[in-house]
Image (cartoon, rainbow over all chains, first blue to last red; front, side):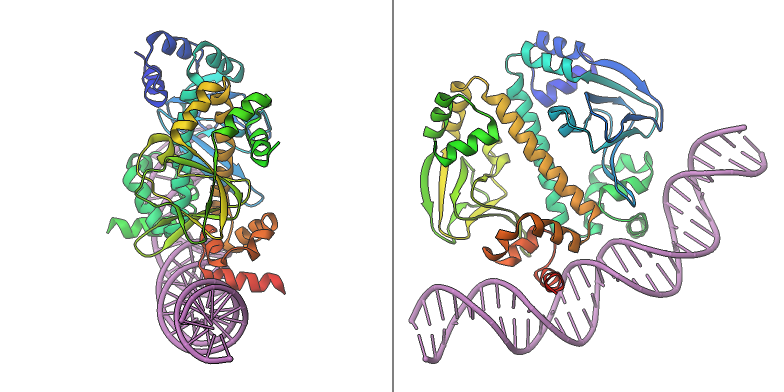
Length: 190
Length: 190
DNA sequence: GTGATTTCTTGATTTTTGTCAAGAGCAAAA
DNA sequence: TTTTGCTCTTGACAAAAATCAAGAAATCAC
C-alpha cells in the first residue's frame, strides 16, 4: 500500500482495497520547487493537494503583511477549500517552502470519487467535521490563551517544524510578531 | 412552508418538498427557560438544535473563566459537533440567554435523514464546508486584527445582538475582557 | 569561500490589553 | 418600595505585545 493510500485510509476510513485504488489513481504526483506557488490568491483553486514530502505555506496577503494561515507538512492536504468547493476566486496563496512532492487531484477528478465510491460523501463529511473541530480548537486558543501559552502548546505538538521553516511564519500562524515569538522562544530555552 | 423548512432549504439546498417534509417532521419543538441548559459539558450531546426564537450561548468552562464560543440567534443551528458526530463527551455547554423555542432532533433521528434523503450526505458536507469557512475567517480575524478592529467588524454585522445579550458574552466571543470591550464601545459612540 | 540576502535577535519605547477595585445603573425579587 | 444581584463603566496601574531600529547569524547565489 502506498503512503497516500495509507493516509486516505486513515483520514477517510475507506477500507475497500478496490475503492482505495480507484481514489489514489486519480491523484497525480508532481514536484514543486522551493518558493514556487501552487496557488495564487485571486485564481480559482481547482486542485486538492496532498503533501508527499516537503512543506507548503498557506497565507493571505493584506495591505501591510502576509498572514500565514497554516503550514502543511507531510501527510496533510492543502487547498483553498472555499475556492475548491464553490469555485470562487481563492483568498489563499499556497507556496512551497522547500522543494516538495505533491499528489494533486483536479476538481473534475475529485467529483468522480463521489460517483465511484458509494459512501464517499459521508466519509468526506466526517473528514471535514474533524477539520472543523481543529479550527474550533484553534479559535478557543485565541480566546483563552496568551501568546506564550499558544507558543508552548504549539511547540509541544510540532517540535519538528521549528527547525524546518522560517520562524516568522510560525509566529504569524500563532498570531504574534516575529519579535514576540523570538522573546518567548528565548525564555523557553533557559 | 414553515420557517424551519425555509432555513433547511436555504442552508442545505433541499428542493424536493417531500424530502423537506420528511426532514422537518423529525424535529421536535421544545421550549427552554432563560438560564436553563440545553447541554452541559461532560455529557454526550445527542441533539442538534435549531433556534426558532430566543438566544443560545455556547461556552467552554476553564478553571478561571467561561469562554463564550458563539451565540446562536434565530435561524442558527447549535450543537457540540464533536460530541454529536463522534459521540464523545462534550466540551461545550449550551445555555439559553432568554426563554427560547428550540427545534431539536436526536442523533438517532438525524441518522434517518441520511437514509431517507439520497443526497443528504452531500448537502450536509456542503453545509459543513460553509461552517468551516466561517471559522477560517474567524481565525484570520485573530491573526490580523486588533481587539478594536474585531469589535468594529462584528458590530457592523451583528448590531441587533448588542442590545439583546449581556455584553460580556460578546466580549468573550471576540477574545477580549469586558473592560476592554466597554472602552472600545465608548470610543465608537463618540 | 565571499558577498549579498534573508532571517533572527535584542534593546528601547509605545501601544494595546488585562487586572483590580470601586461605583453607577438597572432589573428582578422580596 | 427597598433590597439584592447582576452588568456595565471608569480609573489607576500592571502586564503583554507591537513597533522601530540596529546588529548578529544563518542561508543563498555566485
